[in-house]
Image 1 (cartoon, rainbow, N blue to C red):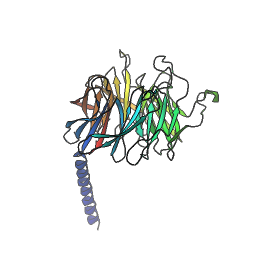
Image 2 (cartoon, rainbow, N blue to C red):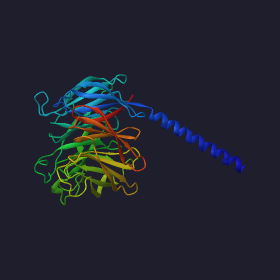
Image 3 (tube, rainbow, N blue to C red):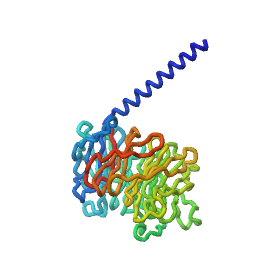
Length: 398
C-alpha cells in the first residue's frame, strides 16, 4: 500500500512539473504589442507601436499607432481593448489644461483609433491610471497641482471629469522645483477605496478617499503627524524634506510602499501598519555617495516575482537594482548598470518578468536587458528600437 502511494505521489509530481513547464512555454511564446508614448516637440508624431515576442526577444516596428500631441503617459483598460493617454501640454483649447485621449486598439495591426478627448482639468498632465473597476481613469496634472477622475463608457469613450481635487500642504525646501504643488503620480488602492497621489513639491504621498460608485475624490482625515491640526496635514505618507516624490510602487501583499524621490534619487520604504497608515522604515539611495553631477530619478517598479525593485536615474543614465526582504520590506542595493542611452525616463518589465526595456528619452532609443531570476541583476541585450523622445512603455497582449 505504501509503495503504491509513493508511486502515485511521484507520478503526480512529474505531471505537475510537466504541466508547469508546458504553461511556462506557452506563456513565453506569447506575443505582445508594445506601445511607446513620446513628446512630440523633437520629431515624434505621437504613439508608436512594436510587436514584442517574449520567446525570441525580437522587437518588430509596426509604425505610428496614432498621431496625437505629446502622449507622455499611457494606460490600458482591462481586456486591452482601449488605451488612454495624457497629452502633456499647458494649453488645451485656450484653457490652462492638458488633454486626455481615448483610443480603441486594433489587436491585429496595433493601430489606435481615436475615440475622443477631453480636458485634463489641469496643466501638463504627466500620469494616467485606471481604477480597479476599470470604469474611471485617474490623472495627475503636474503644473496644475491637482488630480482628476474621469468616467469611462462601455465603448471606451472618456467623459468629462467627475472629480477634481487640488493638492494642498506646505512645500519643500527646493525653491526651483517645489515652489507650488506638483501632482506627479496617482493610483487607486488595491480595494479601490483610496487614491494615492505623489506630489513632488509637498514631499508627501497624499491619500485621498475614492468613491468608485461616483468617481469622486476627496480629502481624508487630518493627521497629527505635523504636530498640530492647524498644519492641515491631510492623511498622507511623509518623506524627508526635499525628496520630491515622483512615482510609487507597492508590494504584492500591500504591506509595503516604495516612494521614489526624484530630487534626491532615493527610495523611501513605508510599512502599512493598518488602514492605509504608512510609517517610514528606510531611506536608501539609488546612487553611490559623492557621485558628481546632477541626477533626477524617474521610474520605479517591482519585478512580478516580488523579489526585486528597479529605479531609473536621469543624469547618471543608469538603472539601479535592489533586492527586497519579503519579511521586513527593506531594500538592499544590488547593482547599478548603464541604461544604454541618455536620460532613461520610463522602463517596463515584460509580463513574464524575463526582460526589462528602458526608454531613453534624449538619445531616442529603447534598450533591452535580460533579468537574472535568482539575483535580479541585469545583462544588456542591446538597443531594440529607435524612436524620438520615448517616455512611456506599455505592454498589451495580442
